[in-house]
Image (cartoon, rainbow, N blue to C red; front, side):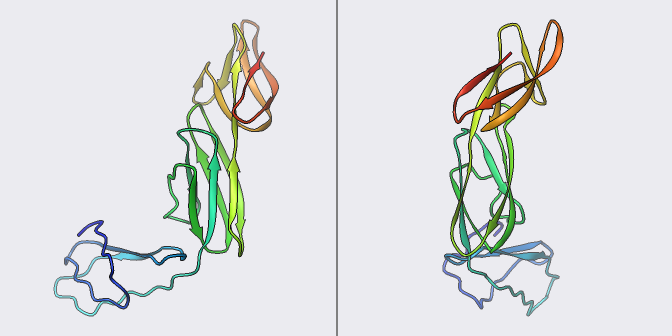
Length: 179
């Protein structure tokens, strides 16, 4: 029964689970934030175990990115983990952290506040590459292109004279050269 969808089951419901094995339930309802019931392990012969929870109305957070192969995770929302943008996540009102990771060293963290209306969070990236005879110095990048969030950024470049910092202007989807 692990991972099995119990389609059409409405609450309150009586569900048989295997004794001595952890039981996990996620309650869903359209336009509401999914609720994970705390896992429990029923003892052999146990009867009348009751679990309760309240589903709250959700507000849609649309997450968009121009970076292929990226994954996003929203803090405190287990149902919004390792999503490929574009993605929509139903959330209760509050503050959340949207964390994006992707190829070529891509990483971005945004704090978003969810209120009563749906929200869209855009994470745009461009690329930086080293000029001829130079290499970029960054974690996870060995001389190739580096994906950075749009805006003014400082990168470290290495050449025969050593390393130095270069300020570049990263534009959406474009590649800029750092010398």
